Length: 72
Image (cartoon, rainbow, N blue to C red; front, side, top):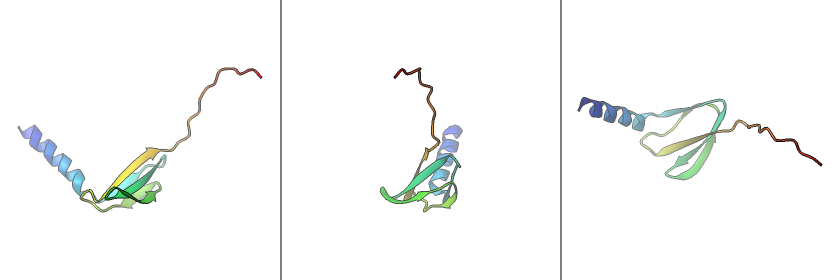
């Protein structure tokens, strides 16, 4: 019983957080009411809480692939 109350409390805290931190290997976009508003570079950023602004972050580090030998 108490575990569910604690879980509900922790989930509700995320609803009120007014900031987001973007890591150095990420870039993010901010959606305000589901519409593109701005892009975010790495660092600390303020956002409007209560799910008015939603931040979507993604990894932008280039990946390398090992290719098999290729003949000409």
